[in-house]
Amino acid sequence: MGTSPEVFREVLAALGNEVVIPPRPNRRTLSLGTKYSPEFACLPYKILMGSYLEAIEMGADTIVASGGVGPCRAGQYAPLHELILRDLGHEVDVIVFEPPRLDLRDFLGKISALNAKGLSAWQIIKLIQAGLKKLGALDSLERLSHRVRARELVRGSTTPVYRKALQLVYAAQGAREIDEAYSRAEGLLREVPQKSGYEPLKVGIVGEIYVLLEPSANLEIEEALGEMGVETERSIYLTGWTRESKLLGKPGRYNRTRVKEVAGPYLGEMIGGHGQDSVGHAVMYAKRGFDGVIQLAPFTCIPEIVAKSVLERVSREFALPVLSITLDEQTGKAGLLTRLEAFVDLMKRRRR
Image 1 (cartoon, rainbow, N blue to C red):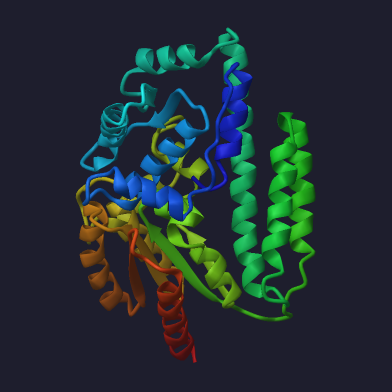
Image 2 (image 1 turned 120 degrees about the vertical axis):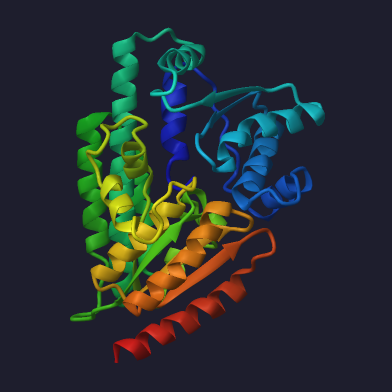
């Protein structure tokens, strides 16, 4: 999911595990996942199914996954994946991490099961802190890349520099090295030649977490918009979600409480997934003067279907263009680009 796999690889390897990272999700991944998934399962479910099968082909005998609570079906993913894998003859262990606030003993027991080196509790805490610090640096670089790409003088010049910047942070070990690597990586991005005085359109992107964070699932939509001269701001980043979901952070310390308050007059109930967040962030983007909002939703995702109907009201009340994009295994990049180009043209006319 996004830039996170390499960081999780480091943590699990430091605990003494041989880590298998499947290929970046591609057409084969999705074909495999679709073949062995229920027809109306959502896109993230199918991509994960395909990724697990590819990892097993590469020798994996254990899968580590996250769980979930609330009305969203994500909490059922791992048990159903495990049943299907076993039906296919794959005897893999599936370790599912649920939020520690639900059952701290279970959470710690699963960390212990992965702690092949027998590291102390303090060593594990330091390891997780370093991982979170690296994820934070990667998220900050991604935010910066969206600003730089929208203003790049030569179209397509930001992306290769951004990839090089990521490698600098990936290679860093320890807090000091991560800080130094981030500083160098940030400098590389800021050196990309940019248009003088150009004020790009600003678009907020909301929706379900997986299709927001994983470029292969959303067909690199942020990169495409950036190269059209549009600056994007995403409602979810991995480190922010980790804190705001109270997975590891302090309740109310970050802005999710504020998002729910803003969404209240339009969608006052927690409907699962990120449906309420999508509405709240869209309202906040409207109040900040953004030129438009794009909602990304996997096909059959109930929370985002509800949010889509509410976003129509938000669009009317704030005169805010909203484009809802549904993603599944049939979605093609050419069709997506055509819709994005039309949406950008609409926003440009409104600005004029």
